[in-house]
Image 1 (tube, rainbow, N blue to C red):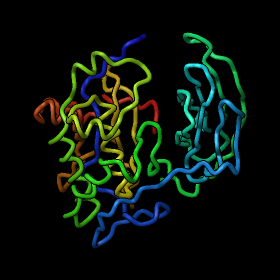
Image 2 (tube, rainbow, N blue to C red):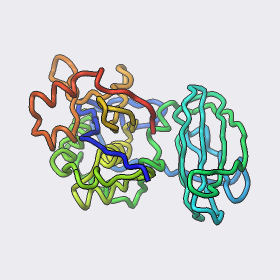
Image 3 (cartoon, rainbow, N blue to C red):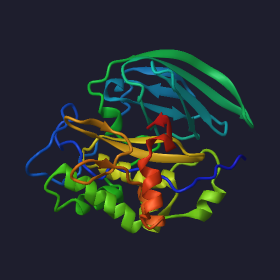
Length: 303
């Protein structure tokens, strides 16, 4: 199996966040509550694409996600979602009775929803090809709900840790800064895991929390889960940092918009910060210069 070699990675905004109110209108509040806000994906069966063994519950597509389940006997199924932005996301599903939330990060428009079943090796059989028209209730919703890449629920320990971490925060700015520093101080880059990594890996935010180690994907998933559980829209982004496969996050700020890969506010301007580089690189000037250069980053996917 092809190995993916990860280099230090994951960008986290440490400068501001959106409010802890409704996802339709994130905004800053004077007194910030720290109670977790966890959006719970559901599969009520009101609208379904595909058929057994691969079904896609699209009942809550307006909330920015679909729920997929594969119950067949093959090793796995592959569900491909292609939005109006033309980007195809390929999600692999092992046999299970449980539904998995998958985000609709292409925004409004018509999605191609294609289902495949593994035959052997890299060979797949087509199960269905259908379309789905999507109008989101809010553009931020795909980045508040959990999904296959940023998987958490109300009982996830990282959710409780996030609430404790931001308990003294007076604003979303304080909350994002607190979570950023928590990750930098408590997680180190796992070079052995990176060298042994293969395709198909999915992070566990609580495993990263318990071991205190991770690759870029783990850093991104943990920090995104913690921020989303505080009602801060957060994108997990995947691409390249130079020639290295890389994961980072961006955060939405009211009156500013999406702050891409920008972390630390100096009081006059935005400066990039990367918790993987910061924790394993000692926040050296060379590392910070690399992080601050947007041309070093190439975005491929959003989750």
